[in-house]
Structure formats: structure tokens, C-alpha cells
Length: 124
Image (tube, rainbow, N blue to C red; front, side, top):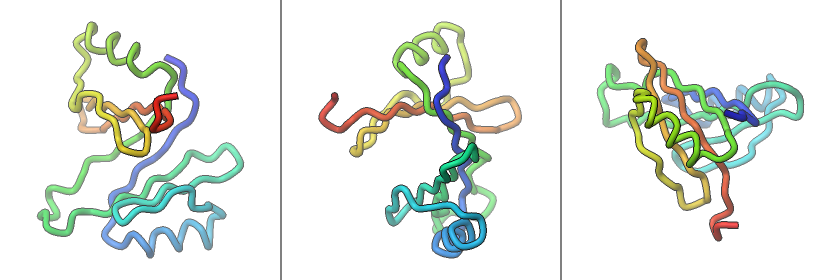
């Protein structure tokens, strides 16, 4: 597997507050913002941060487990390899409208590992 970047995902109640904290005090900049999440990055070796808005309709005990995301090359090949190894795949590959392919595995302690590959929406 070739990991090209890393992202830590936090599920938060106050998306705007966390975004202000990381951009004001820690030098992160917004890369992408939607009503549900904000992707933050820096120009140094810091891992990217994805702030995900908690679904306020869900009870607190249903908050998402910790997530670490790795951008990889050739996600389809990695998916096939992991599937052949009977890895604990907890979300099959899917594609978001903005061109990101994703899949998820979950370790025995509930840590979610998300593997992603960015492909332009046109497929190129």
C-alpha cells in the first residue's frame, strides 16, 4: 500500500467553533467546506483534519468512533487485497459526487480506518 497523506477525523457538535479554533490558533486553512464537514490542512507535515458535524438527532452514545484516514494510490487494488485477506471491511467502496472513492475497515477496538483515493468527478 502506498499512503500519500493522512487525515484525522473528529466528530463535533460545533463545527464552526472547531474550524475557528484550528484556523485561528493552530495555523490550519480551509480546503473544503460543506454543511456537514470541513477539511483543514497546513503546508507542513501535520496530518490534515476533517471536522465532521455530529448528527444532532442521534443520541450521544451513537457518536462515531475515532477515525484515521489515509489517502492511497489504486484503492481498487487495495480493496481487492483486503477483501482477499478477509480484513474487517465495514463499509464497501463508494464514490462521493466530488470524486473521492472511499472504503472503511474497523480494528478490534473500534478504530475506523478510512482509505480514500481522489479521482476527478469526470473520471480522469
